Image (tube, rainbow, N blue to C red; front, side, top):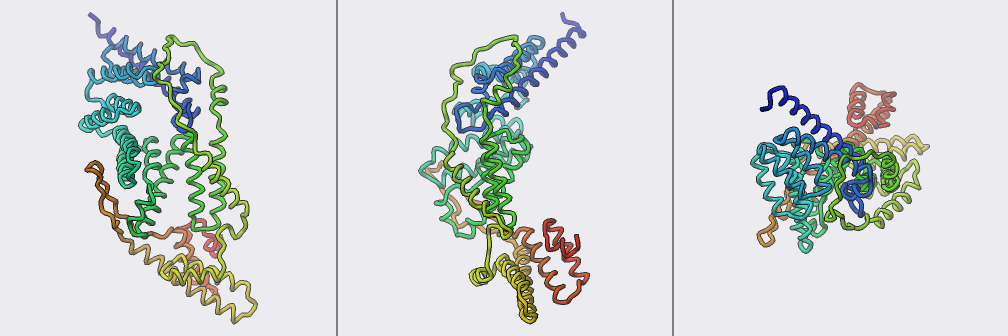
Length: 486
């Protein structure tokens, strides 16, 4: 019979082995990310492939398997050690990995990690029905981020089958994005951030045309913002290790530049996007692999890589599309001038107001053009009249933007639901009416205050307070900063 002191010793040895196994497996994952694990688009982009490519990754995985095995030798009923062993064996023998997870569940049915790992393992090998069953069982046990991530992955896989039904495909992607949002309510898991970024966008033009133009435009705009923010958070949390995500992040930055209301920011954003894409494309897995594999220690055990794990070629990145985006961006910001890309004449600004009389942005543009035109006039009377017109346009712009900001409302879609053989039900959600960016409101406030002070030839306390408020809304507002002497 083992006495208490010997039992404590075995427990400590098992805990040490488990901690060592987790550390080694974490190192292998970190190096695999540096080599492009999870980037997609090329043949060698999973940790399984990288185990065959990089001796260092294989060495760390085998040593972690050995550490977990030693922990189990000291404490056969340690569920954590069995779960860790299953996590390491996924990259060597998935069937043996499944047995390790099942053994962990036999020991302790209250832990969620083995179930979620088995569900993701089944999903990775296209066993979607089995994976869904396990996720359903996991729902009764614990609300974990991996459970929702698994559901999102399954819905993404399901969406591929609806290639003839854009509405049904978009329905799957919408439900997948909801699953990733549910995961993010528990914790900011990088996989959930990446999944949300790629699935929350509007899917097909055919689906959008079934709604009114205003709703589709607003829904598309809000989904783009959510997609970009999620990608930014993913890149920040992972350090940009995912090459595919880094390429998409660069394209998002170029897109953000093209959509930017402030023309002075367009060239900078597009240049940043091109730089991010070039950095991602310049990363060479083989070069990094040679650097990392320079020092390899001998393993205590040597397990062969299962032949069934060899990855099939998934195809290359859409290099043609990326190259086209880079060329267009390079052509655009090559002509970077102080007027930036969106140069508007006074006549164009007046036409914009005629075509969009309820647009605060159009009135603000007209006010800026009038103020600029006034600065080039030599006649005092003409200058005063033009400044007065600019002040009236700025007042109108501010009134419209504030009204748009204060009276935001929900806009419902015209298309309520789509049914396809009773398998997929998809209902679009209402979206909030367009809210003007803070930079536009700040520009209008500062312009109204500045033009008012010019007409009165002195600055009142009210004008000073308005300038300070506009600077709080947009710290980069040059008009407000200059007027306040900052």
